[in-house]
Amino acid sequence: MKQKLTEKDEIIGQNYKFIEELKILKDEINKKHDRVGNEKEKYLEELLLANSEIENLKFSINEMNERLNRKEAENYQNSVYIEELKKENSELMVLLDAETSGNK
Image (cartoon, rainbow, N blue to C red; front, top):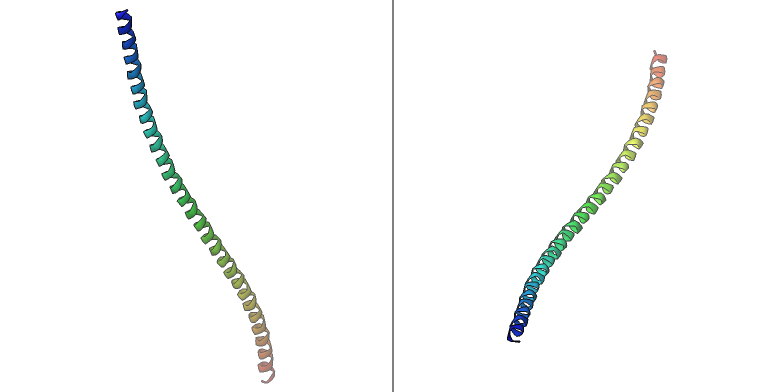
């Protein structure tokens, strides 16, 4: 009987030891989980920051494209105007030549 009580006490002691080991493992797992959560949060913040920078760059690129398109339209209008002036100048030169050669 005493031996059975001793065996049961040993089993209970082993169970307590096992429970303590499980608690330690649980604490370690919780710490690792917290670390992973913190790293995940850090990387998500970095990702949000990177996405924000990308959106800002896209916005800047769109603004530059709009300015470029306006400049190209302005340049085209100027080139059309220059061609008109050249044509008028050429016509005036023809008239001037005609006038100066007719007066001689």
